[in-house]
Image (cartoon, rainbow, N blue to C red; front, side, top):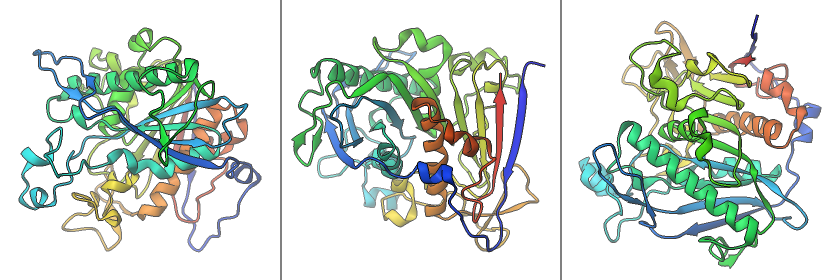
Length: 393
């Protein structure tokens, strides 16, 4: 038997108290966190041409959360990529549903870009506190001109460009980012402090598809020199298209990862994607985890897309005209089951808890994260129910 399959369920316990375990205590914040940004311009990067020859330019913009105690340390890098949504925060255009303005790039003069890359600040802060440099990139320039696999290729090219710039910045202190990564207006010296041979990727929604393509077996030879990706998280990722459920369908080849650990997140209240990515289990030689989160929707993972932000276009994608009962959604995989929906705060706590455990394990080598990853420790059992599957080679 080639594989050992472990299934664990973390059940919601009515009225249960969350009792911190020793594992969780050791994962508490250890590093003071700084926040920096860089912006090389809205059209700084030439995207690859589409299959019909169309070309466009995209921004090179990101927010960076990093351990402030950089001296004498070299930290792994986590790059995060947001999904497909409106690019410009034009409230009147939203009210009028004018997508010629909402999905333009660059945005019209006087209209601010919608900062989707800031929607994962909570994840950046958590991971940076645990000893990682976290780069959340903006990918709005891919939206107007790129569809389907062309968009995935454009997103992967953008990821590679950022990783390449960071490799040069850390190796020599030079390159396009030299003096451009600013924390309150002051450049941060990352020379020698970012380990680009120890990289994790997280992609949300369509960003997940771009991340899968970037990390796929067939693309690994194209990673920038000095860059090595070690772990991948498709967070509520848009599934690659295939005409059937055959995991060996060649349509999956550009997105197939067999030799890197992968953690897939699926939400039962997600009305945007299926997210299961079952084809990854066909030939894996590294662990594949699936976290089926009961009550999780699509948008709450990104604070900018969530109603509490007040941002243009923010909404609860789990909301339907006829919910089974207030505060519940109809499960995406069982129309007869009602799942209690997680709040924005609860859903993000699930994401930050399990993503940080995954990246601690596979970027920092912290095996104390294993009980959380496999479900033998259930730190959020007071409010969250997760079906956890670990597929071992």
